[in-house]
Length: 152
Image 1 (tube, one colour):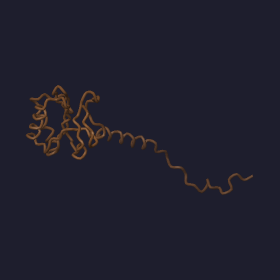
Image 2 (spheres, one colour):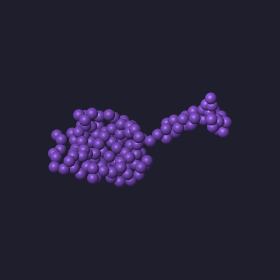
Image 3 (tube, one colour):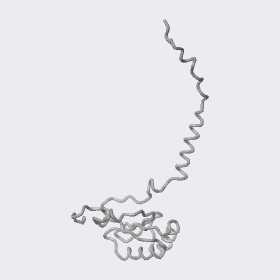
């Protein structure tokens, strides 16, 4: 009985040599590039806050005025200012903002401020950001549907 009538096996090329080490080198280089050139836009550093920890103001125009903000600071209810390097004392705020403005000149600073935070902290951040070279200062807001009241 003939089990292989077309004899296809004899017409095939021989299998290539084993290149498994190249696949390992390629995987290692990909992992190295992810480590060296990782983007801060993939995983944003910051403090994880519960919804009860910070209360943002709400507006129906929040989405319409959205813009890219490469630098942000957070202000909690006690008036403490937090950046990507940790807590920033108010006297060192101008230095920190100047260093951030050099990395992205003319950009927008995002202030994530609790509605219970003192307003003088926001004005001092805004003044320092303008003096440091930021183009605009934007206050973070929650988006609510038009006609719906803001959360307390």
